Image (tube, rainbow, N blue to C red):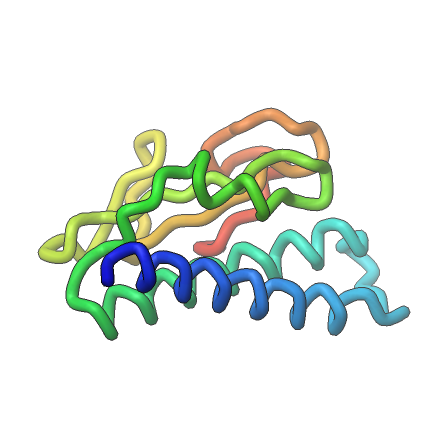
Length: 127
């Protein structure tokens, strides 16, 4: 039963990400963001929402390591997304000294491919 829930969760996340990638692959543009940045932003928000949904529906955090999640989910620069999930009783988390008013933090290393923990060119779910 537990493995089935993890499988369902993973499939849902992949389907949502695929949908956002199709939407963001259209030829609209924002003057300050590249298509890669827009896609990464859509991905981090989708992953964050999927984790929140899982927590709400099941009453516990998904027991997936970043490595297991990232096998199928890479950012536009082919790096794994960074994911930090707080315990259920905690409403805020800290990423590299920065308090985030959310129980889930997801970020991409960005164009420079360096994990700056939400700073620099990283694309985050909380900014």
